Image (cartoon, rainbow, N blue to C red; front, side, top):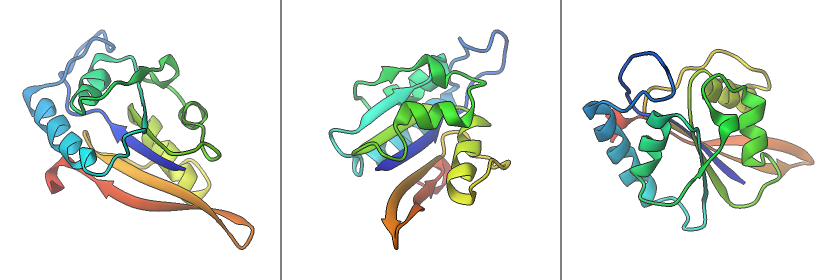
Length: 150
């Protein structure tokens, strides 16, 4: 299974949190990362998105249908992300568009075996895969990308 954890792009500050929209910079970040993903993302990839406006706007840059998942809202825990995605036993590729610190905690849990502080830049992503080798499950980082590197 491939799991892509994509942090929403830059958004306006403010309260309440859920309706915060992307800034112009955030729209550019989302477009740039989406263009990079389009060339690599399988056509049958599942796309799961937080209900927050900024996460939905980030996902919309891909131009593909996605599923809004309430369990991915700001404040979700890393386990909720992994359960929603079906990690590690799911098939194919799942792209999750969500928030910090949740996504960073999920990445650190999968890579280090424990939740640690790990920051993902706005608009950035981690692409992970898993395999069984010598009867042990391994998590492999396929890519770590930020909008500034594109």
